[in-house]
Length: 296
Length: 219
Image (tube, rainbow over all chains, first blue to last red; front, side):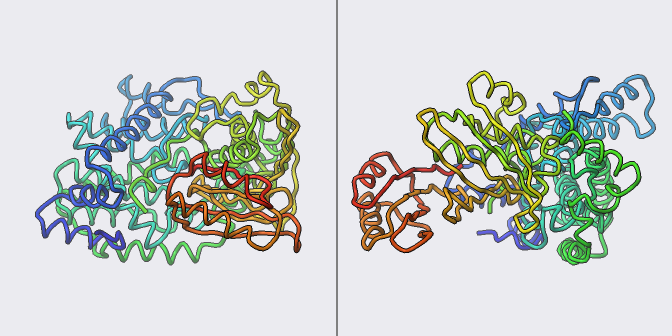
């Protein structure tokens, strides 16, 4: 039985058996849920399909958020890249497009998979789907990588938190980014140690990120933070795959995330009472929404 | 905790606490009343009151009252569906600071005239906690199969019910009894490991002092 209390536990167990982290997680989870391996793959396939649909559904110009604001940012970015305008290059652009699309789908009351939360739902699909397409990776391997991502999320949940109200955005988009970085490393055949370093590097980059949604809604800045979180995952995976190590081990980074989360005042933890929410424009938007009970 | 607690649920956005949680609060009202609802008065508290429209909390609650699940696309159009199905509703806001930040109270009337009022909080990740049924303080989350048994507060009522559960080989995970006053109305909330079937509720309803017996399947 795996306890999911540390990333090092996952790495050691995988190394001992010369297996991928996903292999040991799948075996353990089937046992703990009293289901067959085929059944839990089927359950994961259902989630992945909704992830794909959540991206596809928002690659259009006429997106309207639940607040009544107009969206269409994913479409705008895709159109720019399709027209040859991309600074980041087609692969990273595709990651960003997908992250925005799934997050916009969420904001406009589309069907999404909380991964780990609704507010951070674009990061894991963006990274895994893009790598699957770019590297022609088979679907089963992608599903496997999602088990590794989930295992990383479970450790973060057990050691720290996955809730913006408890840990700030570092616990939502940060955790999603660490999970996606781990999945990316596994998809490109990195070692369990590399997964651990990718997870650490991704989290370190967003340590202290506050949750300061304008009007308390999952729109500003959440949608664009999904794009940043996805890019951050690619950066972390790229470094780890090249053999670059995190000086601070993943478990200690997660502990730091927890202690930083505790130090963040509650006005910066999903209450909409600080940060961007309290800027002049943020307050104007809030006033406008409140006047009509949240528009719509 | 398993991998699907971290990845999932599949849900209609934008917020697990403000949308999915709201759907589940509406849904528990529908389950407890046990029939289609013709009238509902909903009061939002805390952050539910501040931005319920922008989060689709209103649509979520109404969808739940209609019996929809967190992943049903009908949530988006639930207000119109309610009007078509003859469910009339009103929303109110309370800025009482002493309550849970994401809470709603719902008074509903069923097609037959049956009435119910509940208060529940959305506690994060789409989870809910029901805190009041018809004026009696309770506490359950719907994460287990749950037997809700309104009864008269009198000696022996509890053992009669648990006896029936034992005879059906049902293991009790947790059990709490709530009452407003001695010898008045009380509610047993029994969470079980196994699925409950209608035969159990039929048998329980026949017991002396039992007012009703409602099965809530974990959702």
